[in-house]
Amino acid sequence: MSFLAPLGLLLGLLGIPLAALYFLKFRRRRVEVPSVLLWQAFARSEQLATPFQRFRRNLLLLLQLLLLALLVLAFARPFTEAEVARFRSVVLVVDTTASMGATDVSPSRLAVAVDRAGRTLDGMGITDEAMLVVVGPQVEVAVPFTRDEAEVRAALGRLRPTEAEGSLREGLQLALSLARSRNDVEVVVLSDGSQEDLGDLPSGGVEVQLYPVGRSADNAGIVALDLRASPSSDLDRQLFVTVANFGPDEVQGSAEVYLDGELLGLRAEPLPAGDRTSMVFDVPGGRSGTLQVVLDSPGDQLSVDDEAWAVVSPASTRKVLLVDGDLLTARALASDPRVDLHLAPSSAVTAQVLSEVDCTVFAGPVPAGVDGHHYAVLGPHPGSPVVFGDEVRGVDVLGWRRSHPVLRFVEWDPVVIARAREVEDSAGLVSVVDGLDGPLVLAGERGGGRVVQLAFDPLQSDLPLRVAWPVLVLNTVGWLTEEAAGASGAQLLPTGAPWVRRLPAGTDPEGIQVEGPGGDQVDLAVVDDLLRVRGTERVGIYEVDAGTVQARFAANLLSERESDIAPRQELTLGGGATTVEQASVVGRRELWRPLVWLALALLLVEWVVYHRRRSP
Image 1 (tube, rainbow, N blue to C red):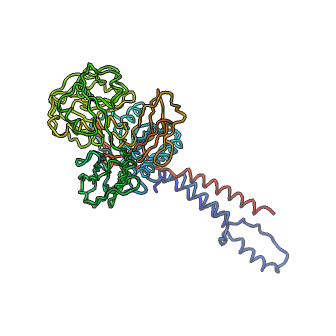
Image 2: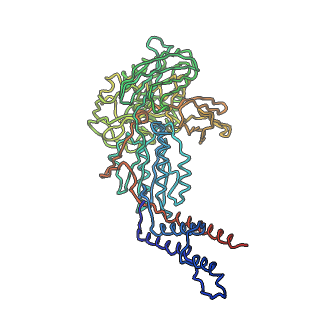
């Protein structure tokens, strides 16, 4: 502890005259007496009249000395060094994605981040303001700019780690855009870091700093799950499970597969550090029910990726229409015995034809009226929902979302693409394969139907000559027809993504109920007979009861980005702004206020003691 005004301690010298008042006595008058017999009593009285007397215990003196000491300390302005914020306005960006549930720090990474956010608020003055931005499956402003510290603390106390993937990049973009409305502002990120490249994200002159949380990278998780037809039998199926070990050491892992609680298989294999391990399990084709995969590995710090679920239906055929297709694509579709393939020219496609098939694959022009149906467009053809721009030559693949069902077991690194088209308007679709000049493959939903769109003609690449082509085509059909009974064999959904289904006309929205993995009711919305189930942030099985429509689906994490829990100690943004490890500076926390309050309390006690002594 130090003092801002150490000379104020000199006021402690006032304790000398205060104590002297209790040692000194009043001077007595001299009086002549008529008898010497009183001399002996007079001598004793003279001794008592000496200027000083022996100190006796006096509660009032002790209280007054203590009161003086407190006031002297208050005048000296003592302070302690503490981490305090350097800003008047702060935007707290708190990461609640799945990796923040890791327990390498107690009790969890998110709990530590919330505690540090609270300490950041401790350093704010009464005129400072704060905003809370939460990064989860969706980025949202939990608390706008406010001077009400209690409101921000209450919102922090309600945060819980989700079981879904999120984008710290989107959270920073939102925080930076809101921060620019203030002059003296700082963005404080409380996260274990990001796998995303933030080098092209401009800070715009706003100071961005990071509180890193987490210590360990020890984690192995399920990153891919797929159910395919068995090569030995059209009726049987095989479950492909991919496990990745993101820790620094090899561990011995085991995976168990259950179907409605019955053990179907067990695999125990070494999991090499920084590598993926694939496991295959046989699933009887005539069986249906709830499929559960459980991973066990020693030293695992994240439990949410150790479990995966699927709703399995009996295998059945899917009716697929290929429009203006080439021979290679037709052969790829016909190779799957579960596909009932039909061929047609674009001129023969009508609304009636589209309604009679489970999905449509367009290898040429797309007719009008396809919205609401499940379809794929294999190239930037006329009528595509996506608006294309200029042609790009010599396209390089930058990356792709391995966890998306369309891209499972498809490697894009060696693919050579001669020509592609720039995307000017994605029509609400999301890029799942990125090139240097923009998206190459997009996927999403339009009007209640699923859509896959290629921004390049496969015949203008070497993709049809690779094994990846039939896998991509069958993946696309499997994802488009996932709603069909038993179509893909396993209905999967990434946690945090909405589940959408078109309902029969006239369905009463009030009678629809959706139950989540914990038995809790899940948020939903119905617009124009289109059911959208939200709140799928937890891994497990969801059950939908919409009267005539009964459905079950599974939500899984299956994210390498979240399973890789190695903490990042810094974030680097564009414009040369690099974050530092701690988002605080050493400041002063003055203690004179509590000293003054304590002195006032002692003054009240001294007053009570004094009046009790004077009372008869």
